[in-house]
Image (tube, rainbow, N blue to C red; front, side, top):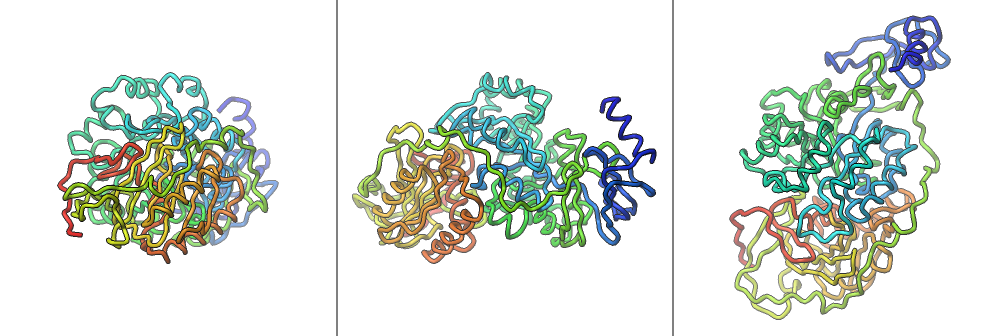
Length: 571
């Protein structure tokens, strides 16, 4: 803090001049001791300047019987995965108490390179919250990916002086770290001294330790407590993920409670959460509420939502209610239920906007689907071997299981003969290369139709699943027409399409239209057989990500990520 600013703020602290805003008689949560105490909080020029009694202010918020918490922080998320424009998502989630977002824009970067990062920075610049960016580390995520652009160590240099850049985004290519790949280590060394985010599911103990040895200090991929505990023992900070598809909070919190371990190395994140889920259940507020319902102490839950993350990312001005901190505050009536009364960012109350401002998107980011129309026969899949590898889709997880199933030999696999199985295909859409692959999946369970998406982590090619070659071709061609999005086809006809023309990932049509369309399509897909425990679109979007075990499909074919003994099934 500079001298001039201090001279103004200290006068309020010493009660020599009035505050801009005073929270009167609040139950204040002290993140440092994990306790509550009563007092007034004085705010001046967006800073908390004093705590006590007797402050005067231009505006007073009477808080008797109410609780004041520091604003919540989402430790890791992808704004693109919400499907709406960045400012729309931030403005919506901020009303749920999240006043800081640590964003990894690797989805946009995989489609459009640096232009995608610039879009995220520009779109969130005037949002009613703190939006920080981690530079994407793995674009493409692996050497076998077919994405739209690359982002190398040399491309990062121009961003390093930007105060909103906190460090290096999730390092998904763990093997490049362990094998000392020059390009990967150029990135790690370029961001040395800043935060280095991890993405390391299911590494063996020695490999995990070697991964942490590189300086990578966070991870959000722990799906169970034993693995999260191993990461903490390696000095890593675990972001407990509770998104739309991957919901790992219950397993990890139950483990914390059972083992009675310290929670300072844990934070909350959403990673990938659709806006309709945020509107229905909340954002980080939902994670707090769920953790408390599992009997995590209130103090631990709110510390995980604030100071733990602030400390992890060296955000010294955030995460607490104390002098000199930014006045990001959440007023709550019931801490157990996380009943939010009002939210403040830099001392200003965040109001629900009737129409959220959406900055214009560059035209070239709205034309990113480049592939030729397909015919039904393009999805023919010969079965020539006795045993076929099958992608096993799991409810409530983004991991998959490698299955091996015996089908009769045929020139074209017909899912209608095996109702538990469907076809799944990945089609390259960035360069018009014509690459595509078709395989068999189990667990999605769609019947008499197909569903397709251009949101397909992390390369964001087109992914489609169905039990009809014709319906699959119609679905893909519909996404070519709409320049990306989600579509559902039933018995030869397009049922509904949600266009996502911004890089094939987002729309600027407004979240009301997004929510309406998604609800309609999800209802239809569950009627078509998709299990209730599967989010039809988010689950589908992870089927081509070749850094998460055990088996995926890319435009180049099936990819086995982890050498495990497959489960044998008789068809």
